Length: 50
Image (cartoon, rainbow, N blue to C red; front, side, top):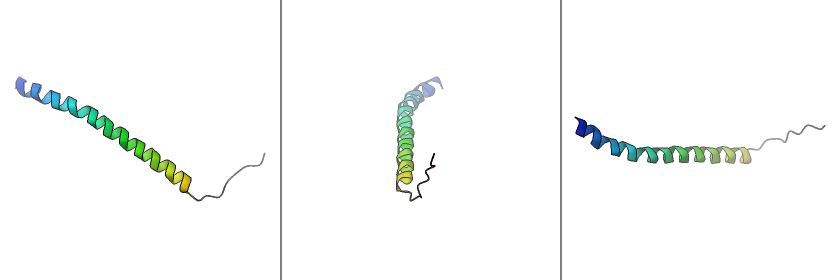
């Protein structure tokens, strides 16, 4: 059983950086999409006169 755990460990450790990259990419895409929505949104300019 110990040999099975040792063979499983490198596969999991190799997968972790890939998952981190995927999560970072998803957040970057979400941020870009959010900024795109803000820029393309047609809103009346609300400016307070001081």
